[in-house]
Image 1 (cartoon, rainbow, N blue to C red):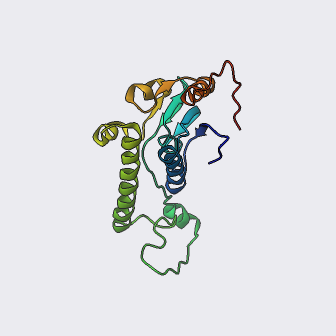
Image 2: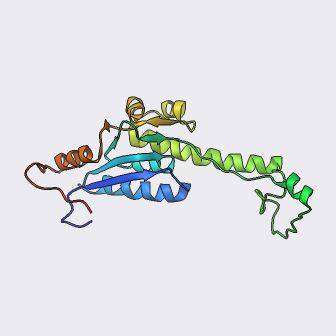
Image 3: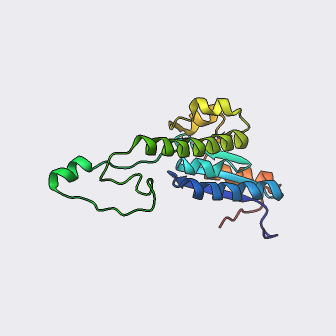
Length: 194
């Protein structure tokens, strides 16, 4: 990291996304936190759910606005079964595949029981990784995290009560906190953030 950077403020405004991308950002933030003396503060904007929350838990401190929507700790995969509609309008898919599961969520057929078991195993493993990361990042027992890690969302105020965020405050409060963490008086020395 650059020597002219004393601390890092991360502004999160995201409903989430793919598991792997969220994990990569989380791991990078966590790596900086664990291997440098530069504190990292997350400031949540309107929304920081699912993957947006995942990336936040690697920081030293998390702030959310009272009305920030956060949480949604969970994993989902969806497919569309349009087979009845396709039959009605006479559309048929011709599929050539290398393995029985290659078209597992194809919209032209129902999901098989074997496919459902396979996908549930994938979801369960990703969920385990997510809840364990939340437990570690927020210093909570994983059993406690799983009590509310069922996809539900929270306001910033509710998230603070659960221990998912450290403080309720806006971006300016987050900037002041980051300044204090690096021993800068924001009233004397102006803060610049890129």
